[in-house]
Length: 113
Length: 115
Image (cartoon, rainbow over all chains, first blue to last red; front, side):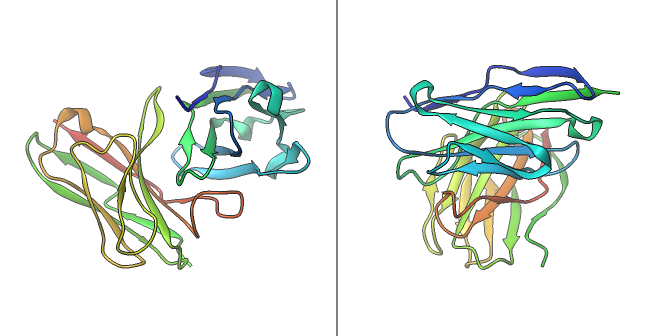
């Protein structure tokens, strides 16, 4: 069955620490990959997306993600987090010609000063 | 340009009551979606509308109905609310099917509590 998995449910980091959030999916065909962020009290916003080409994609606010096809993974990274990065992060996938996004369960990130 | 607008922002219902959540977008998008967000479950698709006049079930459609009233508006109706429908509901739209070139734009959500 098609699925999206995020391994870390809660992450706590100090400011300036590096971040990597895991995302894996189960599907053998083509995919569109996304990371969305939801700041406290706000709606989801697109961080970055991947469709084809360079597997390393850069998004807003210094985030990047790398698509590793052999591992069915699309991990999100940031070299140095800030307190303002405190939010919930969602990996999302469109499988093949599917119509809608399938979301992972989310990772709650808390950045402490 | 307001994007995706949802009303109401908050609602409390008693079990068995009905209500309609409203959603409107002003971006001339073809596709619209209703998701629910529950702690530890992420976002799950309830229904979507690929284009005006069409609707399709998502992952968790039971207990809900939808209407794509026109290109702008996509409403979600709970005919007989149950406590299990306590959730935050997000409406979203995209130019076409969700893809690289057609990311989702979300509304601010409706927080529904069913007692």
